[in-house]
Image 1 (tube, rainbow, N blue to C red):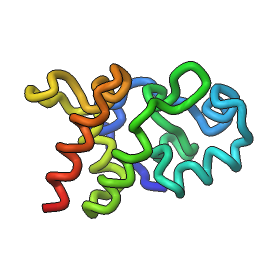
Image 2 (image 1 turned 90 degrees about the horizontal axis):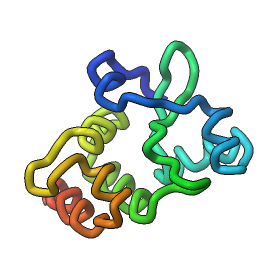
Image 3 (image 1 turned 120 degrees about the vertical axis):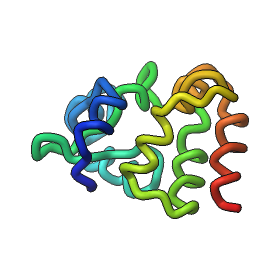
Length: 119
């Protein structure tokens, strides 16, 4: 898990601790750690504790398209912190941030942009 800087922390905004994320997803904290390893979630160390962005949990699950996007970002060579910044930075062509687009069921557009990072 990466220790993130203040700018990225502020960009993400709301976070869930490992235990909070596990409760919201109705899984164990160990399962959340596994989801982070499998690129189903992104995690970061904040104040000595592993946390995930609250925006990655919707109605007890992860948004459709999140895992594919996170995998593409990892395959592009982005670090966890770079991927977090990318997911939460506004993109005028979407419009909004990639995570907002994914949560609005526009994941295909986001994955196209993530795939362009591979080229």
